[in-house]
Amino acid sequence: MASISEIQEDIIAEFGMFDDWMQRYEYLIDLGKSLPLIDEVYKVEDNIIKGCQSRVWLHAEGDKDAVRFTADSDAILTKGLIALLVRVFDGQKATDISAADLRFLDQIGLKEHLSPTRANGLLSMVKQMKFYALALQAK
Image (cartoon, helix red, strand yellow):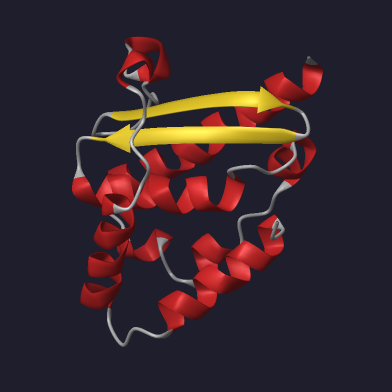
């Protein structure tokens, strides 16, 4: 399995193939469409990420050796963002997730190209995923 760092390098390379942000947004939307569907039983209030302007459900399970994430959103761009994060973190060790430096977010220019509320939502998603990893580490 690829490391968090290797996956980030792949994402940076993929985004580098596009000339402009319209193409990158389309790519993000496509990523959202390929997100494995979260089981309906996890689409509950407890799994909604606070701080997102659209509704984002995130479920984590597993143990400290492999954290599995599933997610969904009612907004197509946000679904692409969570798909990107699931791709980076899914199946990784809890310690690697909680210690991860998500440099790819800056390197692909994502933060500057999101509205302030979306950028805050993205940070909330990252925080929640790291929080789940920390909780699984403690078990």
